Length: 155
Image (cartoon, rainbow, N blue to C red; front, top):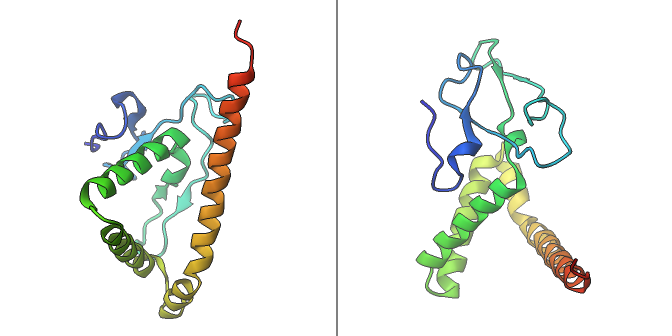
């Protein structure tokens, strides 16, 4: 049975995969059908299956779950992460220490080699700068949209 995601998502956005033989407990999140983009009939994009690597030895097909996340679902997860930091970190130093430890663990887990680990760690300042620019751009776009809506005459 698929896990419940009620802490983040409304029950209507979570369903189980049709191909339960391949991944019996993996949930599939439906994309919102309000968007005109996307191609499949049930509001789901067409997804190219990924073959499992030789380590599993099987020819079972696996789907990239990243393609099934909506922007709203990702924002909901970010909100939960922000709430966790806000409730657990009482000072800037606590927050910084916690974020650094989590980021280092993720870097350690995700890099394929020792060299990549050190290279990514040494270039981490670039990643932070790029993310700050991206976030500042999103904030600026949001403020521009709000200003445009405020100027728009109401019918």
